[in-house]
Length: 374
Image 1 (cartoon, rainbow, N blue to C red):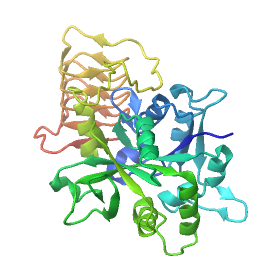
Image 2: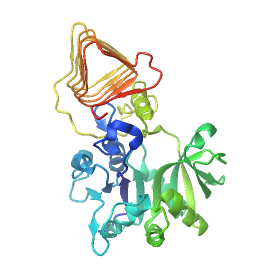
Image 3: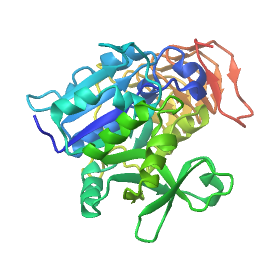
């Protein structure tokens, strides 16, 4: 059952920096952009890139995420020659029950899944980033450069570089050094956590790393440095589009608000070349009341707007009551903003009720998070 390239999405992280939003669900299952979940992006990118076998590696609060991904039908991955497989940490033969000990260990524990498809190449992705990318073009560069590993990088500012894993590369793109969040970065090429490996090389390094007791079993800290030390060819594939790590409350809010201008991501596929797929909400059409006033906002199916909404993203079935104000905010499904309540620069979590007369974050200096999970 040979496939040229199989994708593996790392979706097991706890996402603690998203605070109450990930109290009961995995980070890739967090809502985004009115009707999507974060995992829709890597899965849609895989489908649009012609990748027809995708493994989704889950661990923390995996039930909802596993149910949402299902067989992959939302992304056209459930045909006779395609599949999306949920790969949770599990009990295995002689090893017994184990958790994934790191990103590399998660892939190592699923070598049998990869061997089943015997791919020439393996694409490793994070399940918690917002971007559109044609992985097929990245694979073409990998083959053209005859690389053992190709790493997608984003050219960030020097001020931002110390927050990322940095790839130091020659002018021809050959990577000669990796630095994890360096205090004094030598370059501004930040790793996006997207790797294409030639599988026979990857498998060798995963097996070797699994035998090292004090390894962190991490791609950035162990696998990449080991390949560089062995003189393997690692190539930097520079990406120039919109990319956002939505790992914090602030960055998740900002990425949602970015959609109101949508100058870079083309979320709504106006270019008609790269659609992001998701499940339908099956809600009724929006209702805008006589006093409803909406400016520069995204209002999804099922919403009832009787107050003022400005510069905000409203998910399905949100109700904004008479005289209420929602300004520069992200309001998740089923939330109720009662009459006269005011919300400024906030994320309102699913099914939260902001009671009548309540004023949230009027000063609007930082993003406020309101959740029933607090």
